[in-house]
Image 1 (cartoon, helix red, strand yellow):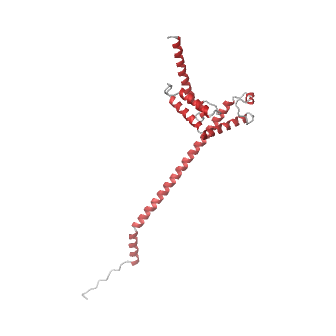
Image 2: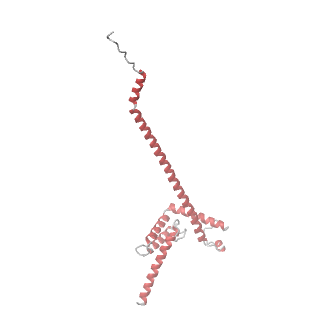
Image 3: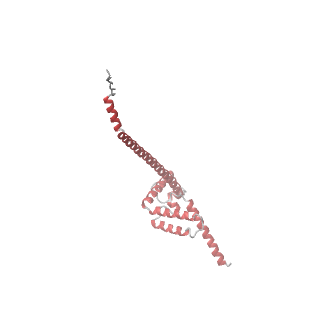
Length: 212
């Protein structure tokens, strides 16, 4: 094997290894935060997000990556890009991250007006500000997801109660309809009984002795 062939083989192995590492990173990323999945800052523009998605999707595409879970990672990438391309969803996500940033600043007695992660006042305190905001964002997003799930569960429970109530109403109407039918079917019998009651018991006729 020539030196060039060896270099080429090593590069291929290095590329395959890098792809597997990237698949693992995506699979381990926090699923509720599309920025984590794409490994991009929340200040990224729409163009930055699309560019990053194209790079990663080509890099770990299942057709080019031997990792058995490459399809799962690819699906996560697609969903992350889709969520960040949705204006409403991204706005909601950014609001949570912004709240996390404010909480971290307050915890470290810094002005909440700071928006630059590389602000000198943050550097002076030696804070790993991005990591702190990411951790706090994760905490808030988990809380939000738990609230959402509780609301869904409550709605399902309420829907179940409504369904049960409707079933009981239907059963009650059916019983009433059956009772009405039985009442009508017994009407003639009741009328005859009433007439017999009104007439009283029939008197037996006294037999006459014709022989004297």
